[in-house]
Each structure stands twice: as C-alpha cells, then as structure tokens.
Length: 96
Image 1 (cartoon, helix red, strand yellow):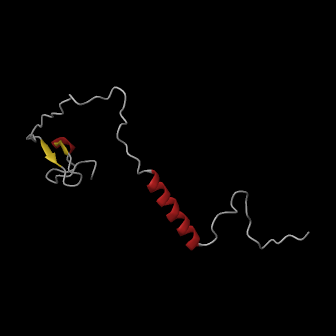
Image 2 (cartoon, one colour):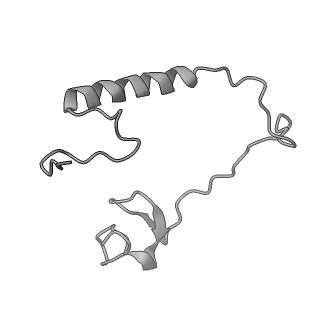
Image 3 (cartoon, one colour):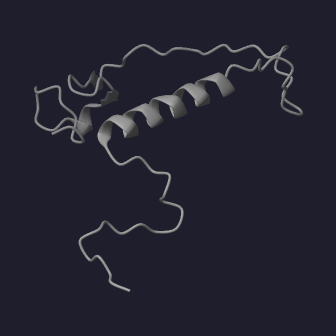
C-alpha cells in the first residue's frame, strides 16, 4: 500500500479537532458559553467549618505619616526616609 507523505499527520484523539480558524473560534465560543452556564449555580448555603465571623469587629487603628517617612510617587507605599533612592526624589529604592 502506498503512503501519502504530503497528507497531514493525525494522532489518536485529534480527529475531531477543527481544521481552520473559523471552526476553532466557534468551538472556543461554545466552550466559553458552556463554562459560563455551569458557573451560574447559587453559592448560598456554602459555609466553611469554623468560619463564623459574625461577631468579629474589624477595626484598624490608622497611624498618620510620621516625619521620617515619605510616600513613594511610583508605588505609593509609605516607607522610611532611609529607603529613599536619592534625597529629595520621593522614590523608594525598590522603584529606582
């Protein structure tokens, strides 16, 4: 039997894959729609064991910026003045 060496090679399980971009786009759109439909289930009623946080108070004491700190103009973090890349630049060493 003669072998056609110019024919595309097909491995097992690849027979049902689309051959062109239009078919590929359509199959991906169907897969995305299927995934979105699966995620529409209600999540109510799912609780983690031991995670009753209803009586927990979430209060944070905010300390204002100190005289030896500055706010980096690149990353907006509040860092100590010793972390300034060059004096007067207001850029931390990590961003410089």
